[in-house]
Amino acid sequence: MPPLLETERLILRPYTEADIDSAFEVFEGHPDVWRFDPGYARTREQRAGLIRGLIRSNEEDGEGTLAITLRDSGQFIGQAGLQLYILPWEPFATPEVELYYKLGRAFWGQGYAAEACRALIDFAFGRMRLLRLVTVTQPDNRYSLRLLQRLGMSLAPAPDPWKPAVIGVLLNPRLRLG
Ligand SMILES: CC(C)(COP(=O)(O)OP(=O)(O)OC[C@H]1O[C@@H](n2cnc3c(N)ncnc32)[C@H](O)[C@@H]1OP(=O)(O)O)[C@@H](O)C(=O)NCCC(=O)NCCS
Image (cartoon, rainbow, N blue to C red; front, side, top):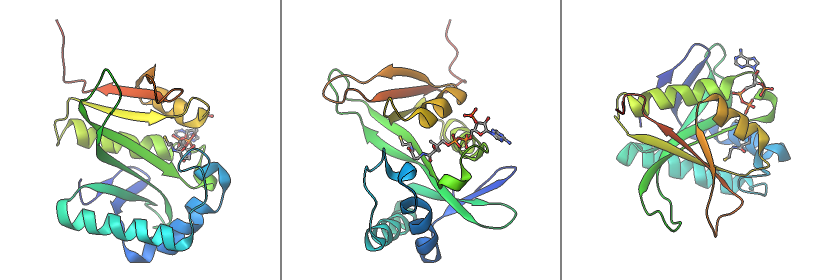
């Protein structure tokens, strides 16, 4: 994971302890944000524990989740990241890298998620030279599905026992067939 990614309107950077209260408000403050993942509102202690874990893993192995902040004000608006992921579904068992993302409700509808994801995709396909990225989302999470389509992902229904989830796959455009 890079220490920092900059886009036109955003800075994606490692979490710090100072983000805990903002993250709790942004992620637990509106049911639309936790409805599909994890499906309930975390307590402040749970959110703090998660963020401390992310800070540790970022320091130890550089893997993990970045806080998304507005470039102009530094305001915390969400998070996005890349994580190693084994799709445990027959007939697949390939190690994959999953792209994931979450914004506070007040920051939807402004293109911030796509902007953050594109920065991570460029990093994953450029610096990390990954062959592909995957995502997993729910079929009724229409904002997430629209985002995946905007990012150019191919979508397919997940096999049992993970139905009705949808898997998104994005190939590195450097892969040229034929
Ligand atoms: C998934 C999620 C990040 C998508 O957020 P989003 O706001 O729809 O996505 P973006 O930030 O890319 O914004 C895109 C929208 O902003 C609009 N927009 C406005 N100004 C824009 C600009 N300057 N640039 C680009 N798009 C802009 C786009 O037209 C688009 O609207 P549309 O979908 O109605 O066409 C958000 O719904 C979320 O955080 N959900 C909760 C967490 C979650 O479920 N995560 C996925 C778990 S698998």
